[in-house]
Image (cartoon, rainbow, N blue to C red; front, side):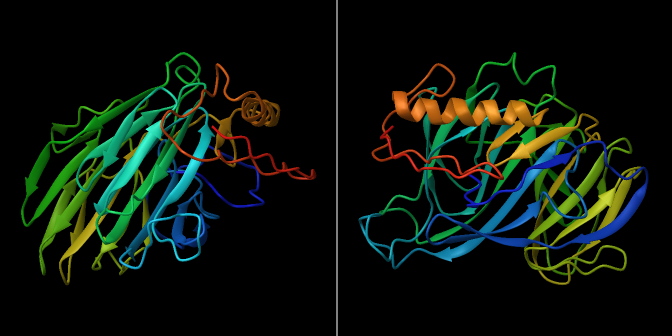
Length: 335
């Protein structure tokens, strides 16, 4: 998923995790994605920039797509329409609760993202991809798009690649089921690639149930409520809200007054300092500037070794916004 803000700010993060247990409610920021899709951006957050290596969390929907039309070139289109755009030094993790999205990328991958199926794209030094809701797809779209920062030891050495998992392991808890997207929960491990100690799980809890979820004390954690509500200590997070849990816990207890669903995100605190701007992650401002220049040059050239064309996408790629303090003349080369 692209950060489509017209004036994205450059930010630094990393090495800021809490040393012990905390309970902090993180407020979402509403961002327009494309012409119609609004997302709730939980990370980066003004209070917490990262959770482990998780550095970007967008939660969107449920959106009613029943009024969409067959053409995305006229007013009234519905759903996701994110043209080819670049990424560096991260992994994208796509997770749907309802709906369907078509994924294409510059290494030649073409896949449909569906509920309960994990799509994870490891970017390495550079990749481009698109995400589109097809006109004949399901009538509702609800999901989360997340980024994982790659460590310096992997971000330029791992070749860009895409993995899709139609089936993932699950663990039954007392009154809940946790689907393990990445990492390990209660001894159950996902096959998805991870380059730092990391965990992500989709947890569904029955009405009125209280569950105890085992945690790794060396990890920091957060939970994002995507259905219903939870009781966590003195907090009562509801739909679309995230709670940062800190580190140092062996377990945590949740109560669901009604049927609830949440994403559990965690990992070892990420100690490397990152520079994030638009869809790029680097270690310095100059590195981000170079990535932007490479992307814009690839638009002019019709593809490059770092950012090849996305095969099968019929339309223009997304120009990068202007860097802070500069003005950008838009380019609309077809990719």
